[in-house]
Length: 160
Image (cartoon, rainbow, N blue to C red; front, top):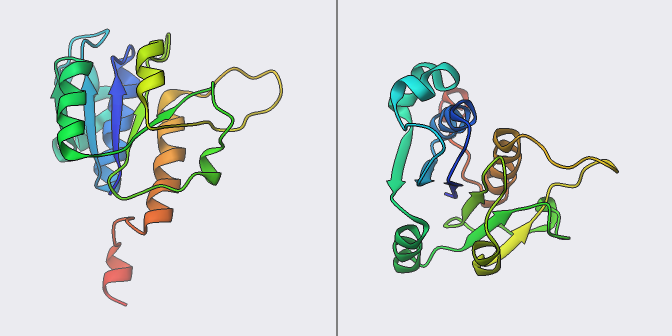
């Protein structure tokens, strides 16, 4: 099942929303520090609500530490960026992909961008710059789960 990675997030409400998304869809979140806010329940609770206890989050103290972990795991790093010509719906996701979301304020540095295994984008209307990072994460994760057949089973599916 694909994971989500957040590169030095700036806004706790977006991080909380993504943690809630991950809890509901049974996926993991990797938070790459430093964050632009204190990583605490109180900072994340408003958007994450009571889902935070169910969210699987791993903190990585730096991008270098995250990369060591990812390389050992042999997971593909898929960067969501406005600097790509590949639409996320045309990309072939794999079970062990990690969807990397950049900082809300500045994306990712050039070396992180260049080091990604793939770069994908969400097509938008002419003149629009970007979507909210939590919305983008939800769209890309939904497509990745659909392609890999790894959406969680609902109670109605399990009882069919």
